[in-house]
Length: 609
Ligand code: M6R
Image (tube, rainbow, N blue to C red; front, side):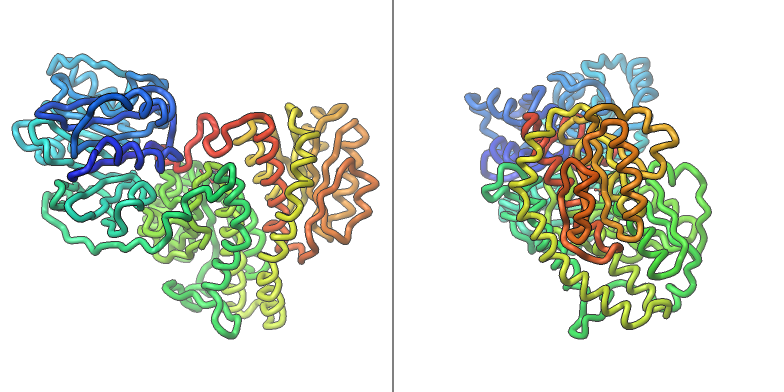
């Protein structure tokens, strides 16, 4: 949540920062701002709304400066407004701060600063407190003032700080919110995430927790919490900047939906050796470790949590280890039963979700072995895990997660197969047959993408519905949660997912004439039971859209419309079943005129509690 960019160099800081912020807009987009060191003073410009608003507001101003910081905001403290937008400054305007995170003790600090220093606050934000704190501790050395200020702060933060009295410096700090430094020739950068910098640099420092950065155009120094200088290896970014562009698609979301066959292929093949055996290169988990695990916890948020629900089913079935799945924000506060025989699996696209990170730390503290399934290389979750199983989805920019989900599922299958085979509870024939079918999934998924036009036409009939129910049994029930989330988050349709067998225990009261029910019926062994559930809602007047496998045409008699997915074994169908739901959600949102890649109130990376 929130994106930070800072630049020191010879070129126009304003242009570089605005451009970088646009690449970070997925992190938050309710207001933005910039602070530039201009001739011995700071020029701060900020406004409510998208970065385009800021750009327009300052387009005609001559803001010549080679050093500055900028911010795109996702509001936590105080509504989106010009005043609450970052950067925030101290009393005399000599210090400006951009901040990603939350200062938990800001009320206490605010009272202290007002009482003892007579500070008058202009905004409702927690961030303004930081600017005043640094201002109070400033006596000619910005680095020193920042160190002193952070001693008083509790919470999560990545900060970028500039001071008019030291106009060649940016000081940055990281605690539990992401921060990277870009290393250029005669210029250097800070940012919340690598895509903001890819146009300019490929050499990156990944900043660790509690580290402080002192940056000028010619030099970058890193210090630990005790002010000792630390050395860091340069991280070379190999992926393509174009991977984070729309390439002719109207939205990142639909582009990313179409990238799923490639993501699945990469995620699978990077883990298979020439004999089609799964190899876990770089993962230190041994056969003995696997045999010792008495339990697995899968912990994640949102879509990643939904991938975990499928993971539970698959790991229990193939590796015969009991699995619990928990949303990270609950796990961390419920004293879960975790010990050194526990395998803790964190799933996260961004690798920066604060609740997931905190849950991971809690599990580690209790002795669990931590393996993460992560998309963003070098992210916090990846760095703090014992082992990392990367998804090879490529950068996911749209807020609504699509290719991350299907590649997370691929990782779940590979892990379950690996553990089952190492434990000796899975026969060689079964293993081989799963691997073969996994290999066919990219092609089968492409067959669903080929139905895009038909799903678009269907969306034209359905997009005005105010309320939608998603039902399914077994693995279909896990996918129904994801289908429902996709629809609600981008089209603002009130949607609700429930295990089909649970309907009659209350929720069916809401089904009336023409209520749209999306019935997932891809599990062969539960097919008959699903038909009964479909009949129950049909009897109450529902309009039923069924998702079924190609060999189950009989479902047409019970449904108003059917989307078919290619035939595959029940256990693997979630990777396919979710795709028509993603496409449907996309077109419903498009027809409703929604801002698909940046839905209201959301952000791609949730780095606050
Ligand atoms: O980056 P993460 O996978 O940890 O993010 C977790 C959720 O915030 C995320 O999956 C969210 O639910 C999706 N963007 C929804 O599409």
